[in-house]
Length: 504
Image (cartoon, rainbow, N blue to C red):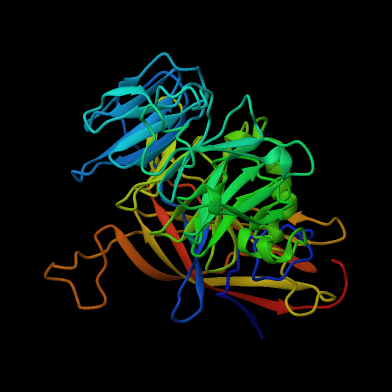
């Protein structure tokens, strides 16, 4: 008599132990896919990720290091990038036109909106751009730093750092950043000198706002929390937290919290406020060995980027190593739910309409669109941990795999498998199930309410009985590499026969 193992609860990735010793709800790896949770039932499914498509079809020369969407008072928006020695603006059709040239080559840059002007910093003199695309120095005030890499707007003031004075944070007078006295106005503009606050020398990377009221100063070894409004005499330090930040672009608001990218992991800022250096809420705790391995491969940690997709409820951590990798975190599942490769990830930008952009070499791309990576097939796989069928002391033989999948454009579900034996891994020839996606248009004559699907997509139950072999545990990898197709695995049943306790 065959017994069942039901697999319909998926909790993301786990690297805290070997693949041979993990709960079945976790994955050893989720390559180019993610876990989607049904908030009603609490069940989850395994989803192949969407692809990318060129945003600009006319190439530029270098890697794009930064993307920003400017929003003007008149309601229009512009996509701005930092590439090579220039700031550039998308022409609305196919290319990026020069906006500001002759800048330092290859740096990242950062931009903010202040009133109806865009402020740009990239290690040289801060620049401003009007709604009419007139670019000039931000201010002629000699008190303004001329080597800022970061800018931020908080409670009517612009804040800048200085690479020559890495322990100082400069603030403008209220509601003014480009006047002749914007950075020197008595009792309104000035700087904070953290060399009198922090116990050791450090470098200010940038700024963030937390909970609307608090201004966060991000250093490489500490985070300093201030209440800083329009009156400098009322500035008040709230807390100093020993929390290293690897990148000015590596902090992002997620709900009512900030996710902070550090050398050790992705930290919850709200938890750090409460617990200081006690590691009680590391968002990357389930994959910490993998995280540390990947981040060690990033030669310049300042190139790490973080962005949040509201449409998919994903937090993306872009690690531009030799093999660019995006780690995907789900605030709902509270774990990392995917490891994406296949395209470059120098920076991200979530547009106002929710569209996600990612920066590459010569192009920026729209993420999570279509079923290809700019013409290349997406290589999706899901590695289960070793499955021991309730009792790891007995041999078991898998006879069937049954499941329910949604699919588009006729994918093939590959099932690579093996058994844990005296030789540890007894790898068998893969088996597969091919699907024919023949959905019906919702408004066609054949459509039946609540049963139709978009043309080229289908929901289907499958059963594969081509498994052979036996062993103490079962190793299974599911995959799809069919070009332009996609698959979502909702429900799986492994049927097995329990045998004796012999190794073979």
